Length: 99
Image (cartoon, rainbow, N blue to C red; front, side, top):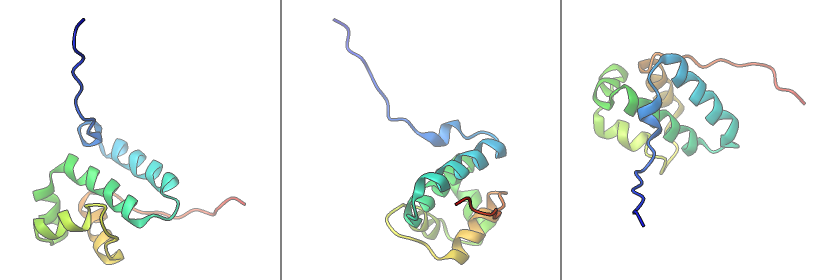
């Protein structure tokens, strides 16, 4: 009997293009059910895919602040989220809800 070796799935390894990153974030918005920390963690996945050091520089944050903000343990301030979203090269948009 052979032993099956598994590795932890890391979504950041699969977010290669801006379109994939945007689609992932959009899906997370739909799944979050109002959980801001969940969204922060999803943005953290995208930041890891792009490189945390570069994202921190582009957002004007220290790497430590970026890691804390995107850990999923807390809900970062909206101003911080906006800085990070901009540093990731993404845009937020709104659309009318259904129902």
